[in-house]
Amino acid sequence: MSSASVPDQPSRSVLVTGGNRGIGLAIARSLAAAGHRVTVTHRSGPAPDGLTGVPCDVTDAASVDAAFKQVEADQGPVEVLVSNAGITDDGLLLRMSEDSFDKVVDANLTGAYRVAKRASSGMLRKRWGRMIFIGSVVGLTGGAGQANYGASKAGLVGFARAVARELGSRNITANVIAPGFVDTEMTQVLSDERRAQIVGQVPLGRYAQPQEVAAAVAFLASDAAGYITGAVLPVDGGLGMGH
Ligand code: NDP
Image (cartoon, rainbow, N blue to C red; front, side, top):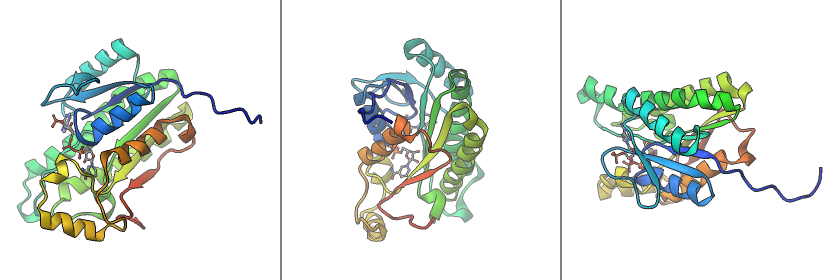
């Protein structure tokens, strides 16, 4: 083998769901800065400055299909899918309505299924693909008041591993990133007391910045990660160690 330097990474067609803010936006900006062709989905707000956006609600298969058609026309079939869109609707089990449970699973888990299924046909044709699902440490450790959210994020692990086995022979990888607590609007709703409690349990003693999750996504999307599939990569400051 020669000692020549690693060739430049090819520019990939990337779709990041829920990329208009928070972790998704940091992921999209980092992949765009690395030279990829990136589109983000946006739902309630406008597309972020400087990035291409496509309206999409991942709970609606027709909306997902329309978004993919637009991305395919603009930048080619999706080669790197980052399934990031997600919600919380916390509450204690005794008081958690079936509607709340269904709503969270529909957005976080069934939404991931909808986008992965739609992305898979193009990846199969190309015999190359990267699916990266944004899970959570809560899917591994559990979290009081988060039965719906924890179930949806744990489900992503089984889902990604099934996809990894099914599509591995076509050079398509499927991995989960499991962030701990990240400083975004999702966690800004927590009380100062709860935030201090969480930080006290994190070996690194702080929240993650969205860019730290984006760095893990950039690695899994890169050619260097070509032999990694079915993995759960924690970005949690050590919070979930051992799970
Ligand atoms: P935010 O609440 O800041 O952003 C969530 C994003 O998901 C928004 O872009 C939102 O769009 C989008 N979204 C939600 N529901 C849908 C839907 N039905 N269709 C399309 N888009 C949707 O969250 P974060 O950035 O913090 O979280 C991103 C991901 O990371 C989530 O999956 C979350 O579970 C996960 N995560 C977050 C952690 C944290 O501490 N923040 C820790 C571990 C995991 P809109 O603007 O329209 O609402």
